[in-house]
Figure 1 (tube, rainbow, N blue to C red):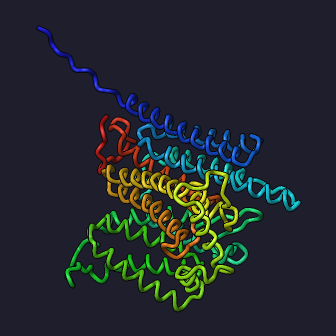
Figure 2 (figure 1 turned 30 degrees about the horizontal axis):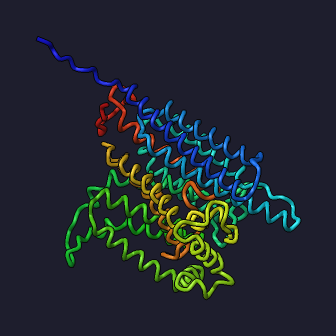
Figure 3 (figure 1 turned 180 degrees about the vertical axis):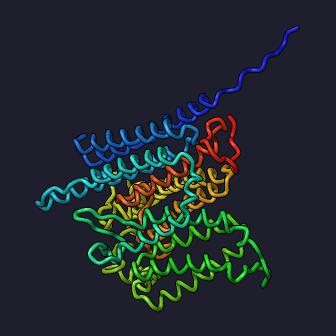
Length: 469
């Protein structure tokens, strides 16, 4: 008579190693896809594999391996899909920036002008800084719940950062928006960091206030009406968005801040009435801004009929639409279109650049990558057992979702153009650094949620149910 024996359960370290090995495989796959994109661009333009090519490929590989090593070292229980997805998007963005650098070099040669410094160099520098900050977040923040202690300090910090561009001598107006600060040759967009601090505030505030905000005193036409005094936070967020729109002329950031607050508020309370009220406030704010502020009115007029402004304010969007039409379903092929004809093709309009050379099919694939990124962020929030972590993950994931919707909607003419950059794709240091910080925070929440009890930090662990391997 034989006695069956039960196989020993896999240890926590084995499970963590398996996740990290899967992550490493996906990171290598993302780099290989980027390598083929770089190579295809060179082949299409009959160029040698020069120093710029190798710096781009080797620099991106080093940054990706460093980021993976930091997650393996400091967050070994984190989910394995999010980092490779963000890295793949970043690799594709570097490839398109490299492609546009080639176009700029060819144009300078044809005009007899000095060769411009490749933008990919600065983008690689910002990527390295982003990975360094990812390491700093994972090393310094052992448990995301510590951030709840800084709820109102985060609000204060976000407010200060938003005000900085309005300080005389420090702020700079670029492309009609006063959202930059300039120190010597360097410029930075503080609102990118402010949105992370605001997400921490929103999550911390709703942990304490969600029960009160869920109360319903009366109904009107089947809609649950919150108490008047509970409308205060929503009105403050709405006024904050209007303030950004009025004083800094930044429609995109206003939408991100207000949208993030509304989405997180809905998740915290489960009340659809907040969405209805928020929608009404958006309509009121839009009408108010249209009639009082010329920069908002011209955005709407260009949106309604861009070709009527094709030679001036609507030139960008018209050229982007021509590029998308030229790309069609399957695109012209990497390196074989004319995305350089669109102003700011490597930053605000990089989606139009991809749309021309990869076509509608390529854009769908990239939107799928963003959908995966957002889904993994929301899944991190769903799995998290403490309310603060859940709401913070939802807030950060909603920032990615809203930003992609606003950018792609603006470039394709679905909504008025806002001037935001596409996460991980666009050239620009402020946005890239903040995006990697948000990824780091989501990885930390995931790590703490999945971490077995014996690996929990010492101290209060109430509110978290460890996920056992």
